[in-house]
Image 1 (tube, rainbow, N blue to C red):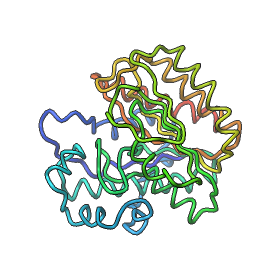
Image 2 (image 1 turned 30 degrees about the horizontal axis):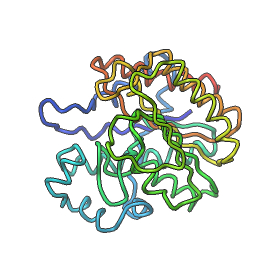
Image 3 (image 1 turned 30 degrees about the vertical axis):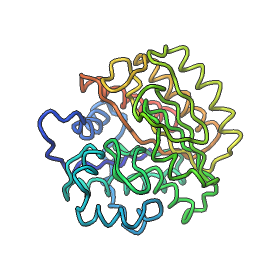
Length: 299
């Protein structure tokens, strides 16, 4: 198991900003403290090249990012104030997921402590996402790594709208999003398979739905690579989520996904996605469980 993390660049966010940046340094610390990983399994990624970003994003949009030309309205849509540090960080996130793909194809599983930037469209930023690491690394794998089919399993509470838009006409990538029906984004895109879940969805309803769908989906699509967006904003405690999952159900969700991918021998890349519970310990511990499950499966 290999972890790629991207904390060399810290962002100076406005006071009261809701994005929990500190989790990206706390997760590796907790993994080391608990002995789930060793220092040798941590890697600082190489930034994504602009040429690779262009596999999924429009040249005009990338020019704006590269030269810090986003308008005020475009920055508000992204959720971040634009800066060179932000762009550097975004390129590191994508680079980490690309390198995680390469490692997973050889060794079965890899993680990016950040990543899961599924709201980034081909031509614009949205929802704390400027570059879509899942999309870029999928296209990179299809182009360069002898991957023929990618399955995106997006279980963040928010629909993977950017990923759905980017791959709307690409039959080599199957996009599956199981998300809160009434949560952001207000206007959903159409994934290859969308499962909108009701507000306050119970543990049993969520897990039974996932159990009924995912095994058949993997068998049907027969992917060479799975991207698992495992946001923990599905928790009942989450400030931006509207589902009702317990910590145990979130853990069971990861167990279902990672056991299936392991048993079927499909290389899997996990990206952390969202998590906005008031207590940072809740966020970190929920993410750490994802690593613990993978470590136990891939001894």
